[in-house]
Length: 289
Image 1 (cartoon, rainbow, N blue to C red):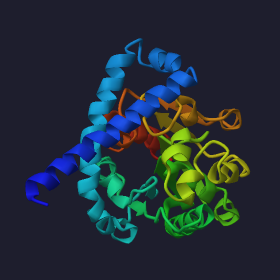
Image 2 (tube, rainbow, N blue to C red; image 1 turned 180 degrees about the vertical axis):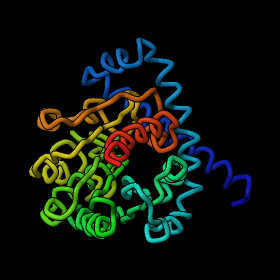
Image 3 (cartoon, rainbow, N blue to C red; image 1 turned 60 degrees about the vertical axis):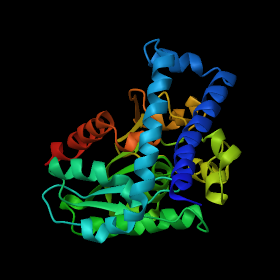
């Protein structure tokens, strides 16, 4: 196959995947009646919001593919630096790696967060409990020399559920002060897309009623400050209601905030998403000094 043919196939894939996901998202949100909520959250501009999200998904998918090989360079040990503020641990989503955070990590450092760590895990041949256990060990390690024993965490997609499970670990609950948790596009209620197209046990566990969702729902709700950021045009968390918190989280003081129209992966690069995360961290970390 010549270079031109390879390039053509690559470009076709870059457009095909966002087109497929966008189509499935439109169908699922209409089937469930969530399109009305989408339109309301987008100020009545549903079509333009969906088009912006599609365009965003195309270029962010390309950036993701290019950045994936650099994931090994984002190991958390190289990111750990002493500072006056508590450490922030970033947890990527399904099929990704620490390269997901190259934009937000830089923004955090510019804002004064010197100790920013990335937790990486394999999406295949791993149990959810093992992945959460590995994060729990990182949290314990980060807390040992942290100011006040406090640690903050930010998770994208599945990463948000991994964080919830790790923070429920008995050792973490006994030894660490979770200063705050921010999630981006996390399927707190599951995603039907995982059941339709998910490859691997971990992915299928994200379907509503799936193994991962059952495990998370069986855990106690954390009493730490938490905010869930989501976009009405998320093409991966289907339907829109899958990204919303459940009543038990809201009853414990967790908040959810809507972001402007963007794609699921685009949340990692969104300037507004980063601004909201920084505002949240400033409120829960800098406020206590």
